[in-house]
Length: 361
Image (cartoon, rainbow, N blue to C red; front, side, top):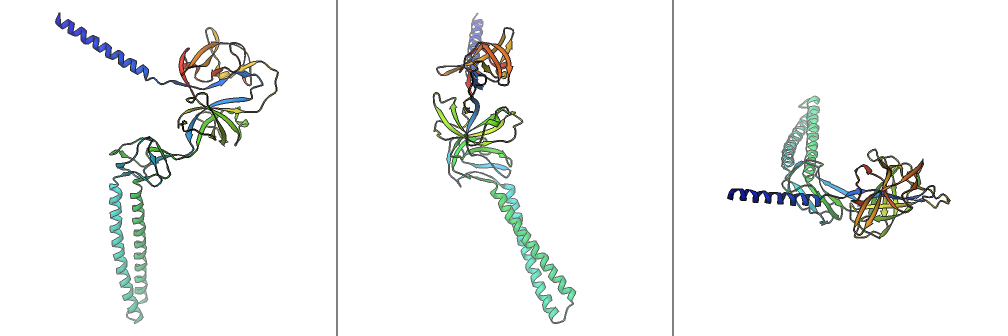
């Protein structure tokens, strides 16, 4: 009886801890990012909103140009660094060995050059006295020139090996802030391996992709309005600084960069942003609502979209049945189910659930 009681107690404790572990696991589940667009009228949509990501305008990936074990590591996330500051260095064992070998070769070449010079002077003196032939004199000159070339090559080798040692050090190339650290002290790293990321830019910008049916309306220096998903009820001004002439094969969109002209310290790199483009007012009497074709899903009950509703600090995706009409160049005409100005998800409908909490991107 006593053993049964102990076993039952252990079982309860095990179930309790498993439940806690599952609960913690569920709490740590990240929110699904969702792109959205506002419902507008057919032929009258003068603005479009696209999702992007905030970043500093200058991001430097730090890496060694040599292989070795890290012996000094002065890098922490959020650390402010100054230009020229030593951030990390390697043991440089192989580079130092090569440098010492190159010094030894230089000393040997210098000795041979001096010997060849003495020999040339002696042969020249004999030749001038008529005590040796012209061919002996020419041989002595050739040997000296070869010795000089060998010496100069050895000097260049020493310089190159010194540079190899320098490749085992990382100095801050600009003033900035360490945004990511990907290595630790005593770690064996290879040449070119990213060990940290330095944000050195003074300006904040948004990187986003524009689809091909809109890219011709986007121009450099065009003003835009930016809303950050994490900074509610606050708009920022921006201007387009870069428009790519070629499509990104991974996203099937044209990369565009937008500079934030009135940045805030609350904007951090990696934050999701929604950039609204105003393409000019269109005069239209058409009151037909239209939604992007990719935002419309279909199930056993018919067509639907996911409305994006903000309730307090939560953003919820709500499944909304709709009745669609003909397919136009701007998307499906909507007969009923949504109204102008409502936000709808425009990607990832297959993985969204009714009532699921999401985050805008």
